[in-house]
Image (cartoon, rainbow, N blue to C red; front, side, top):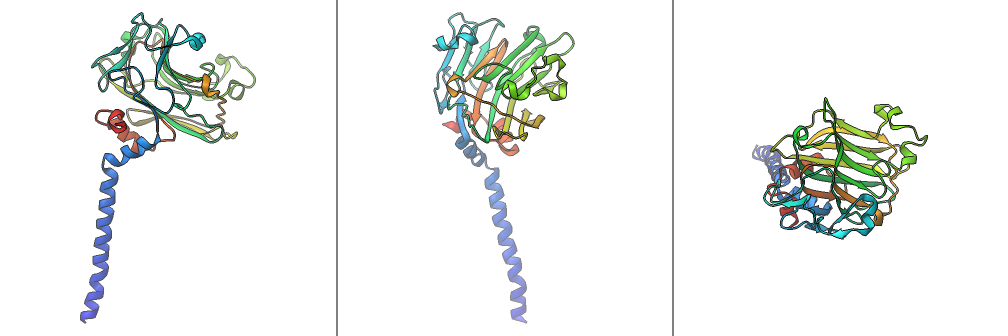
Length: 301
């Protein structure tokens, strides 16, 4: 009888131990440090703009550059343009300082793409994250503006960008992910003739931007440069899924040395906490990144 009782108790003891281990593992996973560690390992670039315009961490060149136009970027100089149209706004950021754009017509500022936005010729994946503070109705001028644009050539040729389009009746926010021009538009159709569902865009008609608020923008991309129609893109706003693109062929042929991470093209507002990762962040990591106290800078340091 005693032996039987002991045998009955052992499974319960083992079960309790297993449950305890599971709880400890779950608690560890929930600790802020655990996801932060995985974020830090995947990070290739981070610009906090706190105390300086150069990147806080960069796998490539950390310097911010400026030029009179995109076409003149080969003659760029380091730092901010001298006219004051673009400046570092002390204490005005999501965390600490931020980059502020005060007029639609201004020189361009950019970081070099090589290594900072690591390009792969096969099975390319990654994540780009940043914060914007803008009142689209009160601050933006009519037409298009791109707070962030990453490309070696043009907005519609092997490019990533986010844009606002200020129309009389609405101001949609879009993520554009354009493969090589001859891949996404092989017959060279006029853009107006391309049906909306064929355009390489994710459109948010009522985006969560407004005066005095900060909005977290993040997008992931995976299975690029496979030569197959399997590339996918996902957009997140404030940590929440806000649209998807694909699967479709996403072949982006880049010369990394010609690639720029341009900021504030035609944009009037604040930008902060620009981060780039060399893989797709999962939903939990995206929520952690969105909720980080002090931003990614703390995880880097």
